[in-house]
Length: 317
Image (tube, rainbow, N blue to C red; front, side):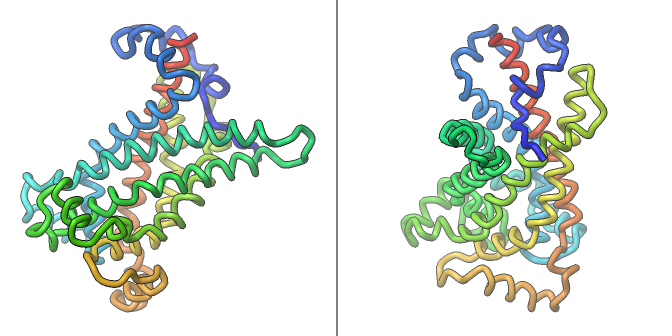
């Protein structure tokens, strides 16, 4: 199975340029932005804007899901908890995922492209190393690099946990408290499940993104490509969200703790397992909502990323 990066220079050239170019001046000012970003910078910018769009749209859903992961409650109870918190607190904790996601998705797409280019250039001609292996390694490296921003997930967890509402006021206050009272290490609580999740999920996402899109009906318009990219990204996001859901449960539980010993992933998982009666269904409580949220989130991210990238390619051509 061949891997494609789905860079519009290769994968999106079939989109009708006339329809994408109309009115482009209102979105991007001529060729200036594409030229200023360079051939590789566009991947970082498009990834960042795609993540921003997704976070603003899906944050309330993520908040309900987080309550389910942390407390093992039904969706109705999680919604009631948010209702009791009030509308003023609905977007409490938005800034950390906004900063974290806009940066990590930029890193995810941008570093994947950069690592792929560098690694492919280093592979000797005729070495027999499949491009699949090289690009998979690039995807894993990009996922590992994303873990540097784990502190944003850490702060998001604390701000969304109603048990910490009285202690942490906002993003800046939470960071100051963690750093002054516990040190940098406390900001990286939950790093191990993040690392275990990021590398493999990136490999699977970039490995199947192109082949899945190739199986969809061929698009002949901008709207058609947008739908295909949404379906492709959404399907992958939903599948990976279910696959790695227990790791996110472990991460949420670990990061809801402030201070104290750093417990191994296995120990945290067994604690959750016992608390939920040794039930797989209870361990995956909230997975159905995570499925729909991931479907929507990664559909938005992939479609927005590809649309912006294709516009930048056309503006730069």
